[in-house]
Image 1 (cartoon, rainbow, N blue to C red):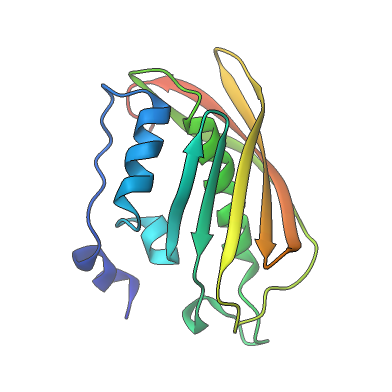
Image 2: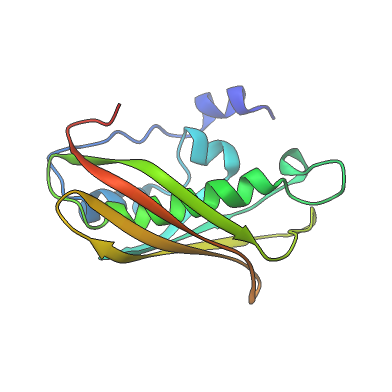
Length: 159
């Protein structure tokens, strides 16, 4: 299945700026796998609470490179999704966010046969202008990547 064909299969998730970020995050958890970039990667939100969000990714050969491991860009994307997801839980009604910095460190490869990757983001700093979150990527109980994400808070849609 190509990413283009996923768009028609997965449900759309519309951003409702009349909700707080935590309310949006909880709606996303309820919706599960949705269309867009995260849907293409197979990323499903598992839980959302203020300052924290967890995701699962079920990789497959379509996300692997020629060495039999999941491409490093998948871990980088999960660092961003988990960190920005945690930041989302902190924003106010009418706000969106935009990633302005992403840092990561790979600690171990993720095998192509991995069933589930877990990504967790936790907010470490927030103020009226920005949110900084740390993200951890797990395969089983093993940490395979760590990183951080900084986002700016914006009124209205980002971009």
